[in-house]
Length: 225
Image 1 (tube, one colour):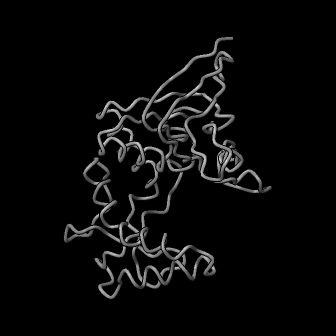
Image 2: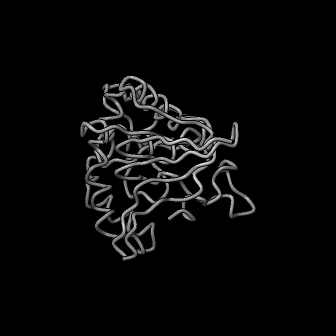
């Protein structure tokens, strides 16, 4: 067994949609990102399995739709337990992030007019789900993967992060400066040094007896936090 050290600007734990998009944004800021996944990069996680679509208040099918209506539906769907500030950011930025995906190469279904098509989905007052047949998640992940490769962003596969490393401060303001992981291929220990760490580990579907989540979704990211 060896102990290895890898240094980067921003360590991103998780290689699904959130992790890949975070890595691209780090690259946009001129910093180095490193994606680490306990499975195979771009394949593990649930994004690629998603069939539904991407919600954005574009009003291309139902012109009455609006950002305000989307926010209202989202808060209601979350039983008003959502953080309103985060909901506001999510909904207002959603159209621009959709455009980003198209620029990365994602293809979404279109109407005869050539405009993006939008279909109804759960909890919506108006039709606002953009989609690619029943393989929207796969299309999104394919585009993100190509963009990651194009930018030369590095990935590390089959490494299970077991702990976050904080600085020497004992205060509540102590800073995370890296993570420790176990290389599942050879049992080596890897110490990742980073100026910032992003947890993009998804949910915890395996807590439930019936779930469509992959077996990797067991909440270990929550445990790290």
